Amino acid sequence: MTSAPTLLEVQDLHVSYGRIRAVQGVSLSVPDAAVVALIGANGAGKSTLLRAISGIVRPRRGAVRFLGEDLVGLPVHQIVRRRVVHVPEGRGILARMTVLENLRLGGFARRDQANLALELDRVVTLFPLLRERRGQLAGSLSGGEQQMLAIARAMMARPRLLMLDEPSLGLAPLVVREIFRIIQRLTAEGTAVLLVEQNARMALQCAAHAYVLQTGCVVLSGRAADLLAAPEVQRAYLGAG
Image 1 (cartoon, rainbow, N blue to C red):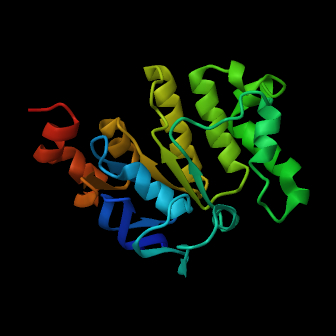
Image 2: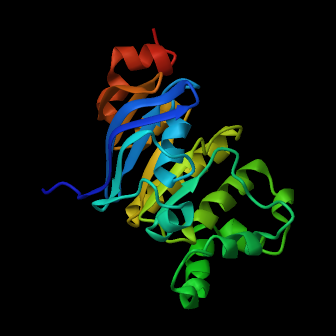
């Protein structure tokens, strides 16, 4: 059985905010149509790493290659056009616009605007609740519904790589399970996911591969199932021991 081709390759990435070194020499890879998890304590550099990949912040040095092309220095909309899409922590929905308007905005960077109606139909099939709520103001949705809208809006850009930052934060357990079910369905349909998640157990159960970040550095990496069973991961992130 051949391994999946690599979509994203991050090499020796360094990101600073003034004198604060948020990411220090991180290297990682994401294969096609797989979930890769990033776990670590608050302040470990996980969100900064996603921001550097998506072009929101510029690294001091290092490479971010997607399908062999270095993304460093490209503006955010050009990275989205290459089908690398970031759903930040906090969702970032436009509360005073309807669900449908939010979804349509998700396709703003696409060159094939004529196909947006087809994409919209595919997305609301994945998220049937949003079809029912399409005329509702996004700000009136529940927290779980807003998270689904944030992911669905990102899917309007037809990502090859979807980066999710804390998708389960603040949600009820039943909603969290539904979000993770959606993530697994997306990868089954061909979208790779780079997942930052405080719920380390669910992230490792969902992912094929994982990296553990600590003070901006990768301190552990490997098969997610192996990390789930590792005593040091269980003690630090899973409440064991």
